[in-house]
Image 1 (cartoon, helix red, strand yellow):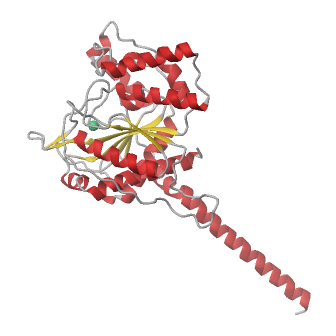
Image 2 (cartoon, rainbow, N blue to C red; image 1 turned 180 degrees about the vertical axis):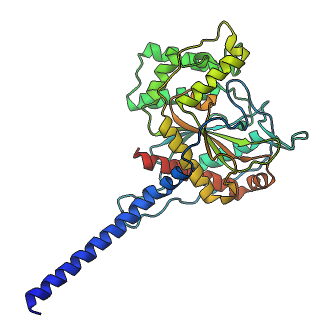
Image 3 (tube, rainbow, N blue to C red; image 1 turned 30 degrees about the vertical axis):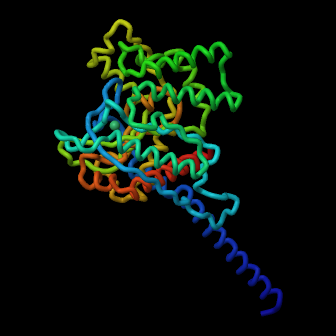
Length: 376
Ligand SMILES: [Zn+2]
C-alpha cells in the first residue's frame, strides 16, 4: 500500500470514529431530556375522566384525617450533564414561582383515619408536605407562596383568589398587567372580598367572581393574563382515601376544558346550587392549557414514583377532572394526591420524615422536568 492510500484509510477511520461518538453522545443527551417522559406518556396515554377519590369539586370537601410531625430534606437534585457544560444546574429553579396550596385546614380536616375514630388528619399531612416542599423549592432558587401556612380554615375560593392577587403582582412587575389603575383596584378589591368572606358557598358570596359555570368576564380578564405567566405554577397538595381501602399510591389530577365541561353539565343536572336564580350559567368555556396541565401531571407522577417506588399507584396515575383550586385561574397546575391515608403502607410511609423530604424533593424534580420539557 502506498502512502496516499494509507492516509485515505486513516482519514476514513477517523471520520467513522467522530460520527460514532457524535451519535452516541447525541443519543444519550436526547434520552436524558426526553426518554423518561416519553416512556411514561406511552404507558399512561389515556387518563381521562372521573375516578372518584375525595371530592373538592364545587362546594364539597372530603372528610377524613392525620397527624404529623415535620421535616424537609435538601439535596441537590437532577442529573449532572457531562456533555453540556452550558446547563449549570438541572435542579435550579431560579426565576420560577410556585404557589403551594395545602389542602383543607381548620374546621375542615380533609380525609381522616381511622374512619370512625380519627387519629390522622389529611390537613396536617398536607401542611407538613407543603412546608417541606417550600423549603426544597426555595433551596433551588424558586419563589414560593403558600395559600395557608398554619392549621387554619381557608375557603375553596380564597385559594385561587390569593393566586390571582399574586399573579397581578407578578404581571405588574413584568410590565404586562393589562388593566388601568382603576380596573386593577376594582379587581383587587373583589378578590380581597372573597378572601375576607372566606366561605365556599354561593349564599355566602365567598365565591366572588368565581361563581358560576363557564367563566365570567371579570375572571376571564385575569385568566388571560395568567396564561402569559409561563414560569408560575399552582400545586395543590392532598391525600386520598377510599372506603374499601384497596387503593394506594400517588395520583395527580389536572383540569382540561373537557373534564370541566363534563363535570359542569353533570352539576347542572344534579346539584341544587346550580338551580339558584342567582347562579350564573354561562356558555361552555374552551381555552385552558390542557396539554400543559397534563404534561405537568405526568412529570410530577414520574418523579414522585421514580424516587418513591412504594407510591406507584394501583389506581389511575394521572386523571383529568374538575377541582375549583385548579379550575378558577389560568395558571398551569395540578392537584397532587400524594398517597392514600386509608392504606396502611402509604400512611406509614407518610409518617416518616425522610419520605416527606423525598416527596418535596420529587415535586422539585417534577416541576423542573416540566419547565425543561416546555423550554420555559
Ligand atoms: Zn383533600
